[in-house]
Length: 261
Image (cartoon, rainbow, N blue to C red; front, side, top):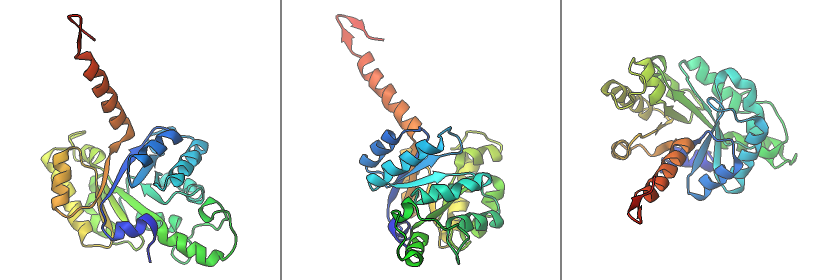
């Protein structure tokens, strides 16, 4: 029996998230009060330190926002303390093989479903009573998210999605475009075609496909195809665009016959 956001994932509810690269608990609070369902705190392309990450997870939990953390599989030693700190999911980038997917699941689940080490920490509200039952509840609530970001992963999408314990397959069109020989051309026909194949392969599994629409039209097309999970870009992109729009709004206003800016 799934619980928390994981239950909503498997119920195919509409879920909206965003990547957070900025090491700021306050920004996580802004994301929460803006009605996102989950945030993916990044440890792959950011320099967020672990103490700040801990505070960001606390900020998310205080607002009822599900906090996932993106952790490369080669940094697997971080998965355990991040989950103990209260993260509700781990996003593993650049997954290519079934063996990697199985290892990802093992890192995130207590025995017998995995080999996560035992500890009494924030994820258990620091309580040591009824640990066996509470550990199973934690198992039921943690999302295992695999990112497909290259040709190898795309070719194995069906097998990856069918690994027991995998909850979400998240597309990574940017790196996928580089793997296909068209870097940053996320709207290129060959990239779109590969994303469609991934989504179709995931649809035949127990896992859910999560899209990263680059435009409103992309979002609409995915919705029409029955996709219900989305990552709506990054905090950096949204903030930069908002700041640019704000300055543009005032720069266009004439004052005493002069144009600001």
